[in-house]
Structure formats: C-alpha cells, structure tokens
Amino acid sequence: MNAAPSSNSPITPMPPSPWSGAAGNPHRMNAWPLLIGGGRVLGIFLIFLGTLIAVVLASPPGSCFTVPSTCSGYASLAANSLIAAKALWAFGLVFLAATSGIRLQGGLMPGGGLGPEPGPGWAFRYVANLVVLVLSIALLWYLLGFTFAIPATTP
Image 1: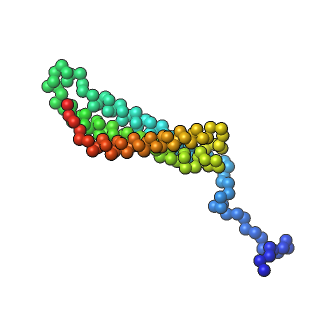
Image 2: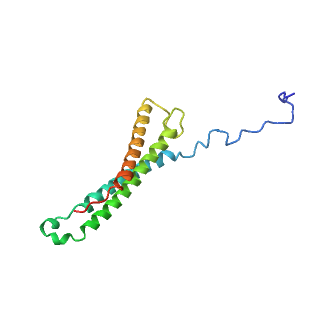
C-alpha cells in the first residue's frame, strides 16, 4: 500500500527543511566564541574594578592618622565604596559563570557546536570550565549570602 513512488511518477520528494538540523550557511561567522571571550574579559574586568574601588576608596586616607578631625566623612565613603565593589564583583562573577556554563553546555563535549572539534585537550578544558563555573557560583553565593547579612562596621 505504501510503496515508494516509481521513477516515472509525477510526485517529487520535497527538499529537506532548513530547520531539520542540516548544516547552516558555511560562510556565516560563529559568534559564540566571540561572545564567550568577551563575557569572560568583561567579568574579569568588573572583578578587577570592584577590587580597585574597594582598596582605594575604602582605605582610610593618610590624613586620618595625623589629623583625626579630617576623617568625618570617611565611614560613609567606605560603606558606599564597599557596596559598589560588591555589586561589581557580583556582576563579574555572573559573567564568568554564564560564559563557563555556555561553554560547558555545547562547546566542549564531542560533537558540540560552540568550539573547535574535540582534540587532545578537550577534557582539560571541560574540567577547567567546570571549576570556573563552580567557583564563580560558590563565590557569588558567599558574596550575596554572607557579606550582605553581616552589618558593616565603622572605624
């Protein structure tokens, strides 16, 4: 009943759908590695910037030790700079965790589409991205869970 049409049949088979998993345009650039690299650079930059703000603005100026009356606004400046630094650290850790998660999702496993074909070092890259992902989530959990629960102390 469901025999294949003969070669002289007027019914021609339909071409495969472009959404059926067929290869895409070979001339189109794969943007995932660029987005992953840019996200990691942005995450590391935000963590660096947050650390710089915490160290520079939350440190007491030298005049506080020689003339204590000049430190009247230091406590509020230190508290505000630590809040800004924590926010930058949180955004930086989110970028690092997101890019490692994207890389782990499809780029490192055999047959994945985000990175190069699996070579001799794909297991090391997989473990390295997994460590970055777990470490970023753990640090973010610590940063948001513990440091915001502890009240700020003033000098």
